[in-house]
Image (cartoon, rainbow over all chains, first blue to last red; front, side, top):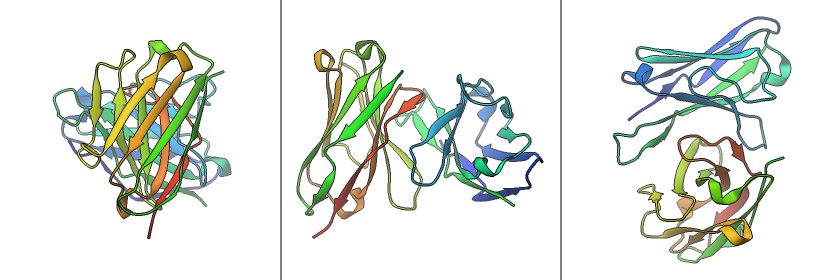
Length: 108
Length: 116
């Protein structure tokens, strides 16, 4: 199973940034999103398409339908500049855990 | 709070071996699947292996199958990755994480460099 992410996305402070993750019928799977800032370990920011772990700002939200899942960051801040990875669990596969290639969010 | 601390990384020659360790605290270790994930320099994330709470269910990515062995000691709240036959392409930051279908907590990572 292959997840496709746009390599880079930019967003202006205070605006909304959207990062997409494409996969065949991805809407039938649970999608998880991780944020990785330079030199740091990844952090889970959205799980099961649209849920947020405790401590993650409400500005981070997710959706998933059809062949595209989307991570939406509202009111973008400079501190949101990071790499973002989508990930799914494909129970039908011999290789069930799949990451997307990552998207670099640049805050303008 | 949940803490995961990796250790054991370093510089090793091609064909060599290393054992990575991950100490866990802040949760009931024996209740959770645990996972190893790596990231090559400048590259994306690769899910390497997971192990069930009892150790009876284990998964390996094709890239490490037959060379790496995951294990755990629930009495010591510790996860291990035994790496044999290391290759230059195994050079990466290695992270332990909690979970199987997703990784909800990650350690800070330990760097493995394979070079002659």
